[in-house]
Amino acid sequence: MTGKKGSSDEIVGAVLAGIVEARHTYAAWTGNNGYFAWAPEYLITVSVAQAVWDWCAPLTVWPEFRLGDARRDSGAHAFGQAGPGHLDGNRRADLLIYRTGSRPHAVVEIKRNVEGWGRIATDIERMRSLVTGCGSSFELGLVAFNCTHMAGTGERERSVLRDRLARMADYADDVRLPGWRCRLSHGSINHDGHEYWSAAAVVLERTRRPPALPAETARYSACEAGRPQVPSPP
Image (cartoon, rainbow, N blue to C red):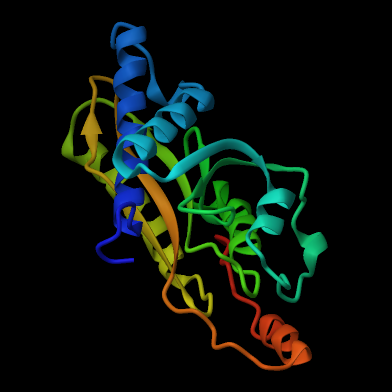
């Protein structure tokens, strides 16, 4: 994807920038007295959608897209050992991103505030079930969120949020997904007078496409081999 408008890095950067912009918007609305940890999720979602459009056009952004339709449009043939029923097709993706044509390129799930991996483990599992079907057009999946620690100014308080992000990064690195890389990306740690916060996203990024297999049965057996592991905190 290097060199393309709307590369993985550009999309991730746009998503994080959208969360930051939502923080600024919420601060303006509340006279900088509101806790961003309590900001409505829809505000963050709309801000992220706008940022992706501004940074990565001509990519198109579709809010509230049914997961079943997204999976169908991706062209996936099989969905791993869990089977198609593992994904509730009636749920909706917060943002579905298309590059060209009718096949989706990326999906973004927005969380209002996340204090640890346990709050997003099921979202990561659902994300991988959507994007990793054999033959899927998806190249990128993100679970994006604001991470907050309510506290006064101080290095010890800042370190609480820094350590929290480091633990989530370790969990992301432990996700094993053949052909994909999982990582945590986050912005700087900020303090707004009453809370530390950082924009962050767990990123599932395709690293390679599986080789084409000549036989239909071989295609399905290859898709079902080696179910990925998505760790949950103890």
